[in-house]
Structures are given as structure tokens and as C-alpha cells.
Length: 169
Image (cartoon, rainbow, N blue to C red; front, side):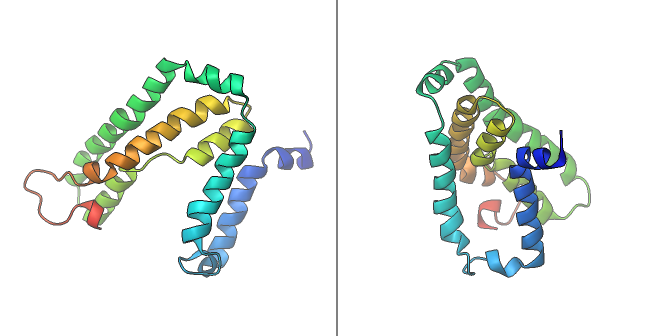
């Protein structure tokens, strides 16, 4: 496989690397209230465009077939909403006995509560020839469920812990 062919195949990953490099050189462009207005362009326009584009390429038969994979959907929901938060909680309990900064622990707890990036999951699954329907639907449902429970999970404090929860940080 030639270099040009490889670059065409890996366009998404290369694009991500390029955007990160540009952001490192000129971070003020993407700051809230900056020229790109990320609070609008990213939150609404980019995410909507990604889902719209992805939705246009889905075949109705594939979508219907993906709905029937109940075991897969249950696995993703249990892994995302039960296993991963529990694993992060156990990890945080282990880290809490070390001299690690309290705010790092709160940050890890918050990240552990956050929904998975649906748009990236769908795009990367498509890039490697996977089933977009199976990648998008369970991850989307997990993201919605986690978004609804984020405040509740982040608000949980250890017994005897004082101070604000991560939802106020």
C-alpha cells in the first residue's frame, strides 16, 4: 500500500492529529467566545452534521437488523452504565489512600461518569468497515442514559466526606 493510499484511508485520524497540532499552536481560536464560537459550532452544528451524514448512509435493512441484536445492546448498556462506573469507583477508592491531589480524583470521577463520544464511535467504526448501526445505536442510548445520570453519580460522596461534589467543580 502506497503512502498516498494510506493517507487517504486514514484521513480521519490524520485530521484529528492536524486539528490537535493547530490547536496547540493557536489555542485562542477555539476558546469559548473566540472566532470559531465552539459553544455553537461544535455543540450544535458539527455534532448535527456528523449524525446527519452518518444517518444518510445507513441502509434501512441494516438499521432494522441492528435493532434485533438485543444481547449486544444489553452488553453495551451494562458495560457502560454498570461495569465502567464501578471499575472507576474501585480505582478511585484505591487512589484515595495515596497522596494524589483531590482535584485529580474529582476529575477522574467526572470523566468516569461522562457518556462515550458517539460521533467518534460511529465514524471510526465506518472507517474500519464495521457495522455503523450496531456501533451507533447502543452507544447513543448509553450516552443518553449516562447524561441523565451524570449529576446523580457525580454527586455521590464518600462517607464522612465534606465539601462540594464534582457537579459543582
